[in-house]
Image (cartoon, rainbow, N blue to C red; front, side, top):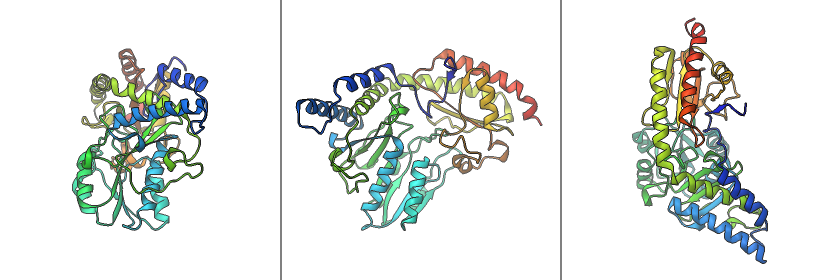
Length: 385
């Protein structure tokens, strides 16, 4: 299976060699606790601060507004619980969307148990929220709005800057954006009063390491720490900081941003090529991703088949793809994103997600298309039943 073509980069990415080398070097040479006052501790802390400054520079904020976390789930949880629980003096009303990552939706369910009022923005058949619905639902007592930038299952890009303008114009709410699937693929940064107030990033989605992430703020805000102890990370996330993970993440972030435009152009061409092939199958295939969505994600569904059948057939051809989301692919129920799209019943079970990464090549895409053609022929009898 080592020789398989891997097209499941939205689930996780293979770390770049440069990132792995950085991680190993820091582990070997700068292993001291960055909170220690001796020389080795100071060296480790200096390295940590440079990593923090690199990420802050990319996001256009200050280093003191960047917290290193264990990944996207922790960053999302921390943002939601931290903002909600520290702003109850304003209200308990929260807005999010019906297609968020489980780390957001499950956090919302927990807050609902605590007496918070959660409302959900709907999406259209392109996976897009309505800014008019946002205007209608936001209130003076709204304390938090959480909207993902790029949907992890079908790649829809939400208008976060337009949404930010509305949110800040009509409320005192903090605007949190999950940019796990967009950072390194789209321009992600803080944009004055119009943009997000806090962002969640995951290292392993940008060819960094699992167990690394960032929660970044546009400016200091009222926020309740979720891990208490020794007061590390400006007192907002206690615990000895994993310097190697932080430095590796900053390296992965810099590399991703440096070649973002080049990669996006390549991904967009691959996406268009595959879409042309998918369209040739007529009603046997329904494409979920819209042409204005993220270039690195392409989701489609094969009529009256389950995703597992297609995945297994493609795997036999040496191609690794996934169902709509790695977080829900082992569950038998239909994804909440697929349900929100209101697909015909014929297409609900057969959703497949292809997602490109830095290690993919033109030859990979050629072989994917050849494998797909073989699989569609093999499954033709099942599709036409």
